[in-house]
Image (tube, rainbow, N blue to C red; front, side, top):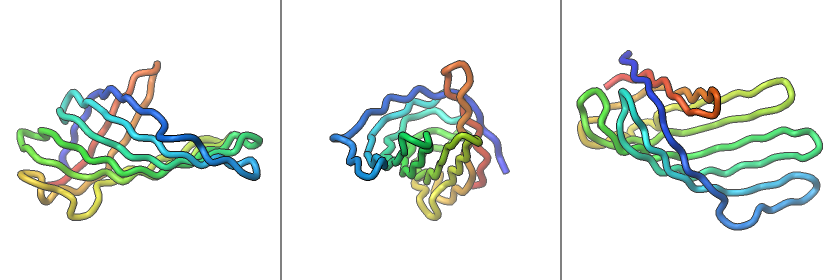
Length: 129
């Protein structure tokens, strides 16, 4: 495994209005990210999310195409996100989609972590090529 870490800036917003029924909201968001550090580049992310007002629970799935330089190699790959949050905490799982790498990153596989501290976004990325 090789490790990369750094920061990223994110801009994300809703696409259309949320669909709410029976106290459950469903929505869609699209955003972009700019990565700095061991991975430098940009991404586009498409997210589907749900939430309940009464319980304060949230869930999301997302697909993110990252175009970058990583370890001196150029290419793109896809990250698959699955996350949930409730009163007891949160769970986030982000992995490289199988066989999604292009260019010099064609064989990439790995796990990606997002850390938010003091409203700043950090990442930790463990990968193989």
